[in-house]
Image 1 (tube, rainbow, N blue to C red):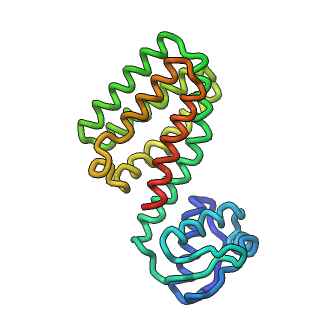
Image 2: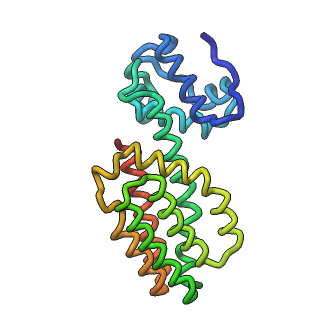
Image 3: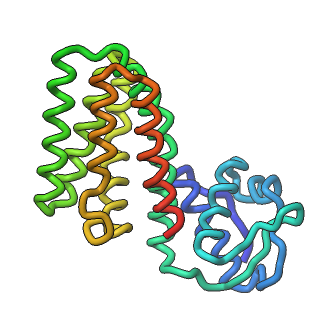
Length: 230
């Protein structure tokens, strides 16, 4: 089976699936070193960053192992978990990485620019998030969580940031619903970030931009790390 150029849809998922097929079909047996990023990128018709993320997904599934200074080697022909779940996990991780870039700076600005109306909106959103979590509906909780983060972004009073976040919300929402399901958060974390979100709101209300950005960064990084390690 030969590699073919990919269609311009979810490229990381397609690249990961194509490389996995090469491994499971015996094109690259256990112990084989994969071609370099540049070669794979040219063959698949994608960028090197896409290849890098695809290889990361394969490594997370236990199929390949990067070796410092030597390259990436095949260590198994079957993933450690079902492949659709592995791909969903990788996609959610990508969402979280982009999310951090947008929201951490917004939190810093929100602490500097929040108004009385923003403070009221933040406190109401925090209460709404708490109530939604106890309600047991994953989608409702995700909507309440996004509403709180949107309130932080709105408090930054930067229309470009607000518009960017609004465009990002549909992808973020679906990713978060999948995240709650993938991690089984209702079983493993009954309060799911309640304390840290309360700290975030308090930092914005107190006008402490450093604390606000640090708290949000820590929250998002913690969830991303948990996602990648499971």
